[in-house]
Structures are given as structure tokens and as C-alpha cells.
Image (tube, rainbow, N blue to C red):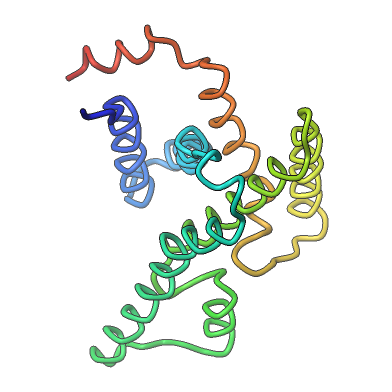
Length: 197
């Protein structure tokens, strides 16, 4: 039986198209509009699809699975990008690039930043959910998000695995998870996507 949610695939497809459009030569106001929500959209979807029941009793299994699906691709494709650039004699790498790569913050393959940011978001969310019961996890997540906004505005510190981005992205991830948990995505919304097909 296929339990795949078509409307999720459509939403992700729209998000990917917006990412591509946002990096083309379009009017500045459209770029600002697209960049204001297209990446938060991916974090919302990731939160909606997050299945905490698979991992809550096994923290090491969670780390292993998420490292395999997020960190491994980040470093694999980053190293492939370096190799391809080196073979084309167009490699531009310095100590800052190398440090950012090792820390998982950036890569010569720029879009890969999302993988380490998502790893950090899911780790923060998992810890809050596992160790803070009776809805206290919401307070913990709220505090982390506030710290993230304060850091982005005042201190502008960066941390490994794009943790500084994850502090804020956690807001959108949690929103997506709550949408699923309390079934705020109604059948009417899902059916509206089906009508598009």
C-alpha cells in the first residue's frame, strides 16, 4: 500500500522551483519575496515528516540514522565538488573554506548547507522532545529560537553544523511537526492539491 502524500511532493516541487527562480535574474522584489519563505517552507515540510516515534527510545540510533542521511551526503558531495574543481583546474580553496567545510558550515557546493542545518535542527528538536516532558519541550524550543534571533541580530556568531541557522529554523520545523501532531492540515487542503493533478 502506498502511503505517500502527493500534496507533500507537490509542495516540495514548488519549493525547488522557487529556489531555482530565486537564483536567476528576476526583479529584486521577487527575489526578496521568494527568499522570505522558500527555505522556511522546506523546514516546515521536514518537521511535518519527522517521525519521533522511530527514535525516542534510542538516541544512538537517531544519531547514526541522521548522520547517514544528512552528514554523509554533505561531506561526500563536498569532497566530490573539490575533486571535480581540482580536475578542471578551477579549484579556489583557502583556510576559511577548508575550516567551514570541516565544521560542516559551508562547502564549495553551496546548497549543501541545508543538510547540516537540518541535522542540527532535528538534533535540537529530538533532545527537546525526549528530555522535556509534559509539553515543556515547547518552552525549551521557544528559548532556543529566541537565542537564535538574538544571536542573528546582535552577536552574529557561527557554530559548527550551521547550528546558528538551526536555532531559528527550529521554529519552522516545530511548526510543521505541530501541524501533523494536531492535524491542522485538513482534508480540504490535501484535496485541493489533488485537484491540481
